[in-house]
Structure formats: C-alpha cells, structure tokens
Picture 1 (cartoon, rainbow, N blue to C red):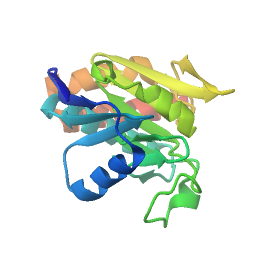
Picture 2: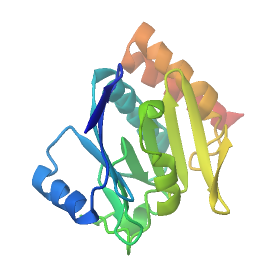
Picture 3: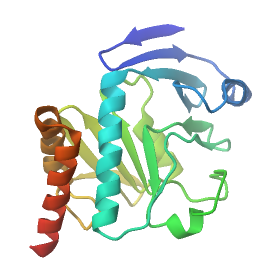
Length: 212
C-alpha cells in the first residue's frame, strides 16, 4: 500500500482490489470509524482525516444547515454514508452529503441503496487536491447533482448538466447565492472571531441577500 500524508489527511492506496473485498472491508470496519473509503474500478483509497480537514468540514456543514433554515428548506444529512453502485464498480464516502430536493423521498429511509434511491443532492469534499482517486468522476457516475469542493482558501461549486460537471459561482440548491466567494470569507472570519460569531454573520448575510 502506498501511503501519503498532507497537513489535513493521511491516505493509502491499494490497487487491484475486487468489489467483494471492498464490500468485505466495509462490513468488517463497520460504521464507527474515522477512516473513509473510496473505490474506483479496482483501486481503493483509504483516507484518515486529521483535525484541519474535519474542522473545515464541520464548518461547511453548519453553513449548509444555516442556509436551509434561513431559506426554509427541509434537509436530510447523511454525513459520510457510503454511496456505492456495484454495477458501476464505484463507491465513495463523502466528507458530507445531503438530500434537499429529494428530502421528502428520503426522509424516513434508514439505509441507502443507490440502485433504487436517488444520489444525494449535494456532497461536500474538503482538501480534494490531495486525493489519489478522482472522486469527482465517481460523483459524476453516481449522478450527484451538486458538488462543493473546498481546498482552503478556495471553494468551487460543480453543477451536473447534460452528463458533465459545470463550474459555477452560485449554488443551485440554495437560491443561487454566490457562495464560492462568500463562504471562504466566512470561514476565515471564524478563525478571527470564533465559530458562533461567524454563523451569526453568515445568517445575517443570507437574510440580506434575500432582501436584495
């Protein structure tokens, strides 16, 4: 296994891994773990997030919930639930994932089966440049409509359109707000003023945007 470490994650790569081995590892490792697995047609990546990674991920989750509350949207968070399709030989555990448009359909679901269920409406990836597996191509194969990628201090939004991801500055899920420019600013504010102060400022900004 090839192992690399950057400031916010530690990753290992295993080549020539069968789908059955991937499924066995998921079952044996269980749900109460810090590692996240990505499987792409025989290549398995094992990632252990460190504190900088988890800190930014949690802040982004807080901002998503704030957006949902202020825009009066129901939302279902599924965290890093494994999103997999055996027919595609692809599986991924996002940093965070949410159902928004399909929340009513998924509200009472306790298990995710992407051969029958829709993919998450939004996934978040933090520090994606250190990944050895192209996770964006996996989300594309799974049909995820919107992906946020944050590599401090840059945020990108990708919207699924006609079978490909189109970079955009606004979020289709959240009233077309200009989040790629504003979210990095608020995350920086959290370092200066604290997380609660930042959330309050972000909430006020969202409300002001609705008035404009």
